[in-house]
Amino acid sequence: MATIVEITEEKALQVKDFEFTYAGADAPSIQKLTMPIAKNSITALIGPSGCGKTTLLRSFNRMHDLYPGNKYEGEILFKDKNILTPKEDLINLRIQIGMIFQKPTAFPMSIADNVAYGMKLQGIKNKTELKDRVEKALTDAAIWKEVKDRLRHDASGLSGGQQQRLCIARAIAVEPEVLLFDEPTSALDPISTAGIEELVVELKERVSIIIVTHNMQQAARVSDYTGFMYMGELIELGRTEELFVTPKERLTEEYITGKFG
Amino acid sequence: MTHTHKRILINKLVMTLSTLSAMIGISFLFWILYILVSNGVDALSWAIFTEEGAPPGYEDSGLKHALIGQLMIVGVATLVGVPLGILAGTYLSEYGQKSKLAETIRDISDIMMSAPSIVIGAFVYAVVVAPMGHFSGWAGSIALTIIMLPIILRTTDDMLQLVPSTLREAAFALGAPKYKVIIQVVYRGAKAGILTGILLGVARVAGETAPLLFTSFNDNFLNTDMMEPMASLTVTMYNYATSPYEDWQKLGWAAAFILSMFILSLNILGRLFIMKKKGR
Picture 1: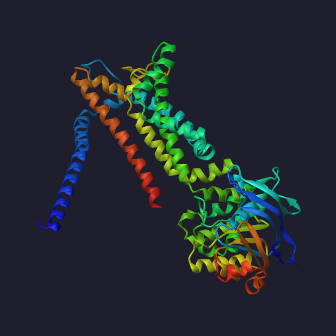
Picture 2: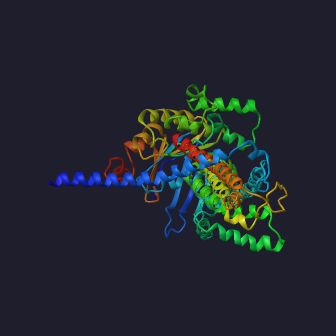
Picture 3: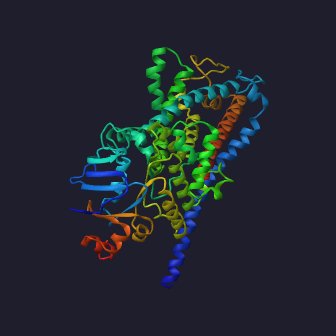
């Protein structure tokens, strides 16, 4: 059984006996996983490649549904409702639970249109409102100063780090409750990485954040809680400072001290 | 001779041979262009664009009928073939993906691309011209649409698949329904490629003669009724060029020149789109 620290905050999400099986696979990639996610906090998911951390992350916004044959079992509670039911409104779910990907995913359109994309999907047509919220999102994503004179330019002209912040702006523009980060800095240089990390910490005042990372230092720097996963199971969930200094599980200790990985 | 000398010699030999072969290949292209331009420009005049066909010996004869017929036949084929091809390509890339049905359509479409165009003409003759009892512009357009369809379908499919799947996921992650993901994100990402496919598809059918010979047939005068036989640049060129009359032969050269320039510019335009896309 996993060692799970008691979460004092309100919970943003609650994973209960969750199992996930990829299409065509014999065995589930995630087994009987139970895990609370604290509200307005940053929870980092760490673990060796193939441990299921990204698979778990992509379950929170039901990204696996894009490919046929994948199977969820158990529950993921969001606002006291299980989001894994077949009748869950995925569009509505994904508006509330946003995602930032490993590689920047700027759409082939202007910078302003990129940020406005999610809002337009929600039917916001008022030009002034769109303009104001684009500016606010870009400001919150700490990229407004760099792009304010070229909002109409194609987003592909931005650097990787700028594109990633643009994607964050696009995600926060629709005011989600939860943001999922899938190794958001693995394609970026150290300076851009530091910028994104700073931004993630600032964002937690407004959203609950789950971040998958290969980089343990990153988890230690930004997160409040850290979950260590191994072979499709949660081994330990603890307050970040405690988990890295005094891990309760032997496996966690071996992983963070570099004995395997 | 040392080993090194021998190697240098062989290297030079291979380089000379391959350069020579390349020169021979490209010299034909310039030869064709030279013959076309020297004969075609000579035959060009205003009357070509303002006058219709006339019996041999008349001064005021032109290709107006063939130009308009060509534009109408190819235009209708484009209007039908492009949306059909793009939608079918969209099905393959976005919905069918690697399914059996999609793979079968891809195979059939590849076979159709290499089918002799005269066979397609014969098919349209059998199912459209024969039942109607006469040649018509529509029949010509149908034949060209069938030839164009697999080209546009496959380029659309290929170009859509080049759009990274993470881009689709990112749009889904913002709560976009599938049709909006396709129209607003995937199409935009593949815009230049699809446009190139359209241009190359149009260029391909614009030069077809065989399928038009027994579908739209020909008309020496201007006709804009698609229900009737219609002139086209290609068939007109074939008729005039094989005639014994010198003034008709000149018109044939003019038709060849205009047609080549049209197709050449479509191809260059297509390449410019590709270059622009790569340049970004």
